[in-house]
Image (cartoon, rainbow, N blue to C red; front, side, top):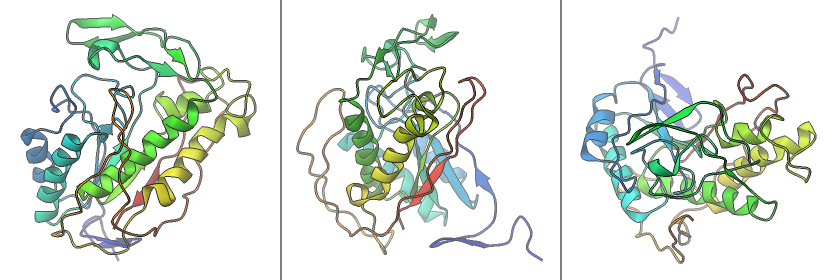
Length: 281
């Protein structure tokens, strides 16, 4: 009879036990969102868990919510995560990145002045802790229909960056009032286009980005040795708020789109959505 400490096979992974470490914001990245040496040490020390799910990782500078959280949208950030992944793998562990765009749960003071965006221009209640103390959440700029595909592409770029960094998989943060959840909830999504209105419309953002992460734009390797270094990243466009366009992946597609996030009809404060993990190994 298997117990908590028995090995388990999950897809292509063979985990040494059935313990998963939940995501916890640590705020140990530098001002540019690069995971620090302390970050690598922290995850290495916990690698005996069967699976580690990282803290929320922003897919773009705009997507950052809290101070000193790590990103996955620049070359330096990928290098920082590579050190994290190598340390966990050296201890025999597995680690997946939780990609989290905070949407309106943010403040410009926490992200070098970058704007805050959300489905609708409605400020979140309460305050955000910043380097200068608690500040009211700002009114976000509402994303237009034309902009939404580029935000989805940020997630796909970030997933590809995670593969380049050697992480074992991707989790999309679809709850707790962040961007995916903001699109799902009628209280925070007042779009009247294809991304709002009905339950199907509000779920479209989650479904489209989950598909984008899993398709050829976030290709993953069927087999890759943990000791093999990926080819150098080749971004073809960089800006202060958009993710780099990564070069062609060094492997072929091997995953299919995951089950879409469950839509919600409840208020933003109580609605929940599922999280999707896409393996990269």
